[in-house]
View: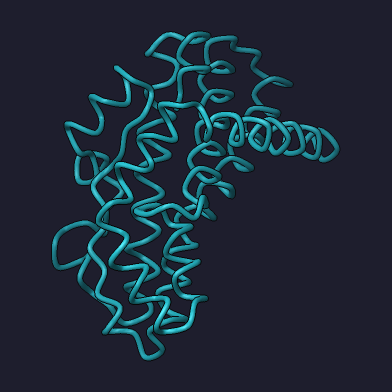
Length: 208
């Protein structure tokens, strides 16, 4: 999924962005769940900004070899929420939303850095991190299990459809891999990512 970036930048440029994006994404899930009354993430030590807590070794390895990987999902028990569906919706959307916010913050830092310090190496790291955060945010909004978008869709379905969705979820990873292999997701993903990154960069220029 990150092939396009990995062909342009060396690992030293993209590694900080990957670690930051994955960590903030998972931490946001855990933090929002914590404030909504579910302390499961904190119990298992996942309410942390330490990347090591969130890295899945095999998923991380796959990311660099095949351009598609994953972090360890933060454990969440929606039964602890006062309003289960609303709580789970907020927790699900918080991960991608945190990546979009982080992309904006990094773009502002990139703009300031370009105007005052002009460090080309730092520029590459920051620009890669912006792209990675937007990619992760958009990708996770796809309504395909086990991505966050599927959980959001599931919560909008009637109860009977929700149960059917749970049954189909066991086969979803195979379906996701197939879509990635055929390049279907990439054809949809990157035009959206390019548009969002272009928009973020241009909007930031107006304020810097």
